[in-house]
Length: 545
Image (tube, rainbow, N blue to C red; front, side, top):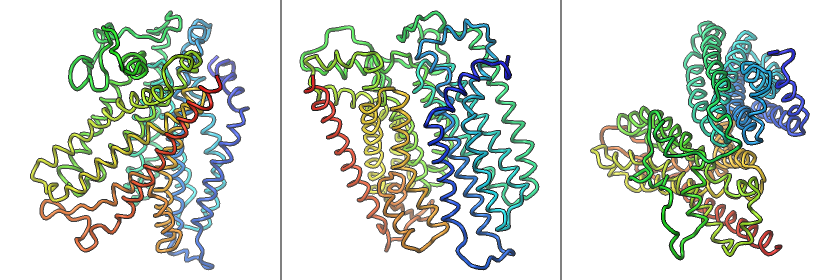
């Protein structure tokens, strides 16, 4: 019932592995890893086997890239395992079936991880090509795969656990990323820290990591099974609206008071009076009802997880070692990258899914009102939530930490942060106008943002590691102008006391071209998206009717 005769597992495998995207993803994954190995392959005709540093860097980069890719892809496969049933209104039928909840959870987990297992197995021949270069033993490859598989299984179970709490895939996807990415970063840091210990790292990877990961998997599996055995939302009849007053009375932990500051900035109370003349009904509906129709559970989890992670980063990067302030700004930017698309990716898709888009387009509301109402509602929530992480930066400027000597740089951080908020929301709104499902729009938004913000940095790191000082390295540097992270680290910081300088006075603004390039390209990118969305709203849909 759990494996050999599990209809959930059989159905998920047959329906997912036969899709064209499964083969396209496999080809792209193997081609990407193979291209990395090909480009980083030593160019010398004679290899010095006594100094296999190049081979070690290549294998380390291979596993690092594969582990990060697997961590990023896991939520896209597993976060919608249970929420997808709720969105298709088949959750109650699944619970009422003779299947045990444990078999349902196990079938969903194995089906979601099957894609990733195939990808990792297909990458094994590529890493085997690196073994003749020396410096890496087969035992190290085996240990790395054991640790990576254990971590991916834990990530998949975290996604499934998050999926059991929510009714929408977007909420489960966001919470999964907020929990998985810090764990992935900790795993990378531990692996690198144990790099010089040799056999100790092999022992840690083959014993400690699997035991810890599978123990947490068992605990989450039991908790998820218990939720399916006694589902809180069973019998809802597909209704999506949550009683916020009842939720507030039963909430444990953070409580959002929608009629008080600062909670009313991102969660204004429901309207009890008539809408004033001249107000945008789309914006008012989105802010007061639509975004929070599923309740505030996701919002409360996002705030608590983000602040819990921000406290140690803030203490170290802003106050103890202020020269590392760009790392904290990078954390705030990365948080907005995760949060921004969630509140805008379903702006138009949700209308399609409820079959209300045609009705909306026949109203007297102009396309421009629809557009800026949808855009500003999602932008307001995501920017306010992300701004909670920027308040400590203002506080640091008031303390005697020499931030007053770097006011242009601090102002530049806030400008970059504001443009990033606009870019993530605009990209998600554009994807929402193109795709018909919210889950597809959200995943597409994340992919576009990763290509713009993260991929240039990865290419730049790869070029600086294997081709330093070449024209290719300079090209990757220029290509990083679209990344706010590159612009953040390009701004100079100087400290007369209490910190070591990052940039010397003569070359203080030596990377100013990256900052200016980011400002220009970001404004052009958002302008192009805005013009395209306006055309889609007006010419393609409104006039055609």
